[in-house]
Image (cartoon, rainbow, N blue to C red; front, side):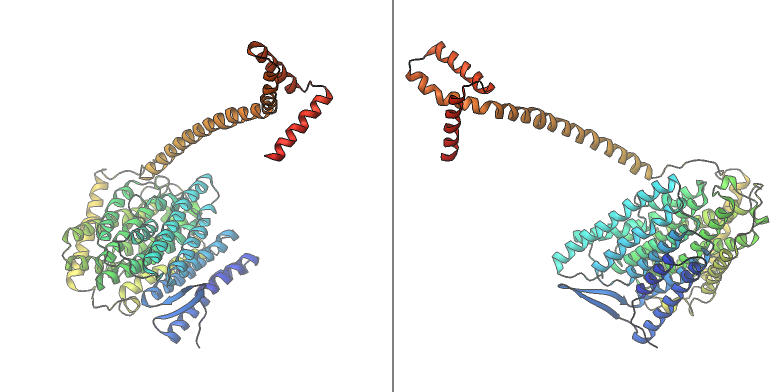
Length: 594
């Protein structure tokens, strides 16, 4: 069998069906749709091979609606896998908006990673923003509504930057092909920033920590799987080897650790952890080597499974308890043992335990950094890797399921949630144990790397041991920050305060300008014009009659008195009928001549 059907068509068609169907059929269609899409993708891969392109001629533009090469296919496969898992995870959801927009969101992400030109990319890039925000708004709280608006502002801004950059590049080169861009040009810089917003660059990262905790239980899983991974793909496609990514990525890997350690909301902790993991990916892309690029996209692939698993486990806790605050949780292993166990698998995977998926991808990036002589970057990544164990590997399962007993006694997560988590946990283990047969065969560049040599394994165990020991010492000595109800100030404080100041400044400036324009134009000018139009005919008649009065010998005060009396009579219309008719004829004659 062969196929030439664009994968997005299947996903969007499934979304439309979900929108019109009722009852349990909605859940069935939401699961079957990505399965059919995955089969279609496999058929395209087998029948056309690499470098197959679907094109469309639009006016004078030749658009590449879909480009199938190893890099785009890896992410297309990944998004189909993720969509299947999340659809199973959200089978219990009765909110039609989440299911409908969720599939549209999936289709937009797939369309973006398959786009071969900047116009197609822009369309799906904006659809990605518009469809994903409903996963936040679906929670229907004041905080989620406000968070969704802030999310939309940043992501629409990202799309506008992409559009401006594409316009400049088309003007300079005459090409809209989505390929490697040069940071020496202004268009390339704008596109770099557009991708950077969705990647969560420092100072632009606040949408992650703002929106993830405010979204629905399933919505946070959608967000962690698609938006940031689409951005990582775009960066790997457009800016491989871009040196600024080395330093940006190192900062991203470092600073979230400190926020994650003191954060009380466990899903916000995972959002900081997301920035940390994307930092590793940015470093790999910035290195530009085969091992670095492979490590970056492999880590993005694995992140969907282990970070998705952690978000799913926390979503299950939120679904059963209604809270995500570590200070209010604890002891849940007694009533949610399966969720606790699966969460521990995700925690072990993100921490980089050998035989887990992150071990076989994160080490590729770190080895590449060392081989290229970036020892400072390597040391920073090493520190960041140790921090991951503290804030995600230990903190998440420890404070949610163990720590102090909160007294909460609830049911285990629904069966569909457990099945979805089990699939992700199984993927973490299989990829970690058999990377050559699973993940490495999908990577875009040739792979010559063995993660399981003695040096890598011993080094990783040493890192994990000392990191765990440090956590234990800090807890026993009461130095580790306690989980308290608190609000941590991040850079979003600057955006919010700066936005308020901008609003107030604009309000004062514009209102003052409006008041002055109103006074000058409406009050003074229009008033003068009104007075002028009322007095002009009378003054014109006075000017016309003055030569006749002078001819009759009127001068000085007598002439002035005559003019004033005549002006008042004409303004009030107090002339005899005959004289008024004569003046009317004279005025009409003047108007005709003029």
